[in-house]
Image 1 (tube, helix red, strand yellow):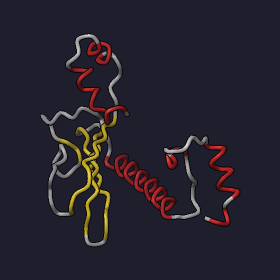
Image 2 (tube, helix red, strand yellow):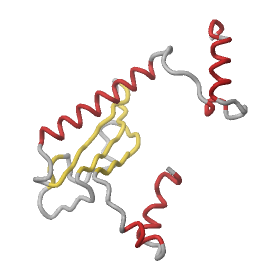
Image 3 (cartoon, one colour):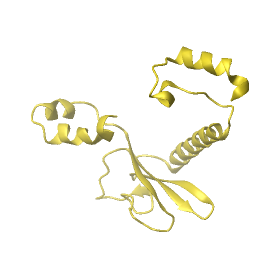
Image 4 (cartoon, helix red, strand yellow):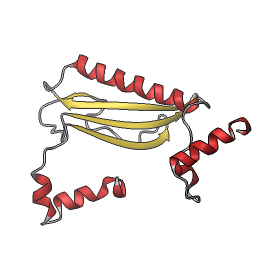
Length: 148
């Protein structure tokens, strides 16, 4: 996303031409906030609802579900922590649990792929100094497979 999405707020709330047009579009149902990577146990941020869960009256959330994620570096290595918040009464706990478990399973699968040296291959972005398309890269990989 251009500018890491920072331009949306400017265009939506501070630009007289684009603001009304963006305001007329449907709002996203899920908000995602990546809070970066931090040392475990050092609270450099706090999710909207404190420790996560259904938010009580008076705490307006901009989405049906807000997800805050942070990577925490600990003694066993990095861990991804996800905190989910939602307006009370909008979603059932079991729905949130199922969503969280599905997301965890998907990320575990991706992490497993990343650790597997035989998974995937190179793309043009791996060779930004060369003008190669994907077919050329795959041909080179096949030609030199024994050398890799």
